Amino acid sequence: MRYVFDHDFHIHSCLTGGKANTPEVILEYAKKNNLKTVITTDHYWDDRIPTDVKHGHIGNDVIHSLQPYPQEDGIRMLIGAEGDIAPDGTLGVNRRTFDDFDFILISATHMGSTWFKFDGTPEESIPERAKAYVRRFDAIFNADIPHHKAGLTHPVGSVMGPSEELYRYVLDAIPDAEFHRLFRTAAQLGIGVEINLASMRNHTLKEMPQHTPETHPSVFRPYYIAREEGCKFFFGSDTHFPDEFAFKPQTAETVIDQLELTESEKFILKP
Ligand SMILES: [Zn+2]
Ligand SMILES: [Zn+2]
Image (cartoon, rainbow, N blue to C red; front, side):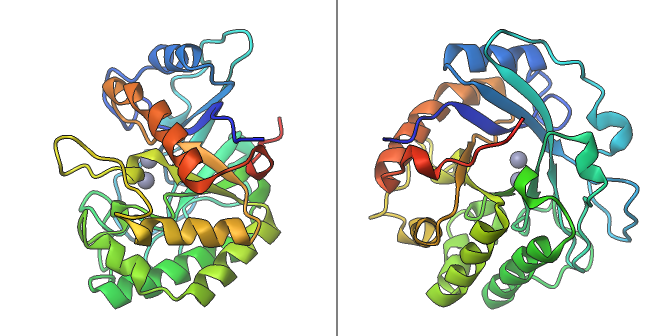
């Protein structure tokens, strides 16, 4: 059976997205597109975890401030977070953090923009970024966290830098065998693998054409390998502003066709 796009596990509310992205607007998006589960995932660092690096994430006092969320029959609107990892390997979430959330995304790939750039990051060159990619995924795998409640966000995407185009060379610098090992581990741990809809288009061009296996083989290779290794996939729109919701479902449908995803490959978040 073909994969059904019925959820969105990566949405920024007005806490770390545009002011207009309120819980009510997110619920309306879910209703309009027959989504059964939507999860807010604002940029977050558990401030009980000390770090020397500067970052712009919100902490524990703010992340829950919009709750309780509006409810609608047949729709689960859940509280999540987009956690991060510092260049020194410190993870911004731990086992205790998970008690406060339904689901947590963890980003191994925030190596691009200045907003996410931690002081002292050594990840300037393409080969250094490729090494950091592998190191960061391993840090997530080795962490003492409930992996079945976690998702690897944007395993491909321009957030890994150094630019919208050049990030593909970072992916190209990682051999097939290394991707196989990483995704085999992900499948064994039961951590979800995100298909990040914001990463499946070119944002620097006005018409934002969607990537295809022909135009962007670097972007599709990790997903083909992840499928071979038995990973489970979820969709994340990574929406920050309400007007982005309009084209995300269509992007998802195209990706489902491109990857020939089946329903048995869906990451299921247990209630
Ligand atoms: Zn992100
Ligand atoms: Zn995000």
